[in-house]
Image (cartoon, rainbow, N blue to C red; front, top):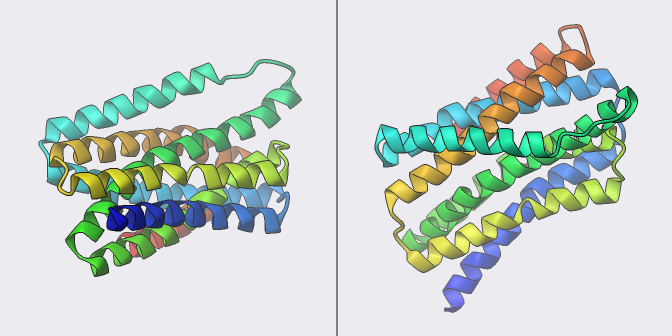
Length: 243
């Protein structure tokens, strides 16, 4: 029982620290200009796309049948589309512009939260295998959650959300990782198909957010090469992280 509580605590800690540190970095940076935000959003899009294509989805397809992964992706995309429509705001152009950034940050946060749950499963399962494996997985996950926290907090700050509230949201999206770690520790060996579906579902949500929100918004903010440079840099960093 004590071991399960320890693993759960580690899961919550890793989740909160990873995205929370990213949120605090965004707070320190302050309210960035359009060019800088374009760079950050492009960078985040590159990292997210790499994680989805070279980490989440390959792992999902390796653990279960292709159909399970495909269904997970489709349901993830449909879910985020429905949520996107539900939180869509109407009003004058300035309000819509600002609220769209807040909406973007919240949608990114939702994708991160969904992503964090199966990562929590990985932490819990890793610790049940060996302590060293669990620690190694925890460190890698914490590191790659930092830029995700930045990508979430930055647009919310530009949309007018207070620094405290933006950082608080980045802490909150880390909580599902602790829940995932608890389930992974309790069940020990979860069905590969279940884990594969969770990974594919999170991959689908992040794929839609990256292609439908991050990349277009990054390009609109600055018409030069900034967003493209940020995307390529993020893609390279993402490759290094997934390897």
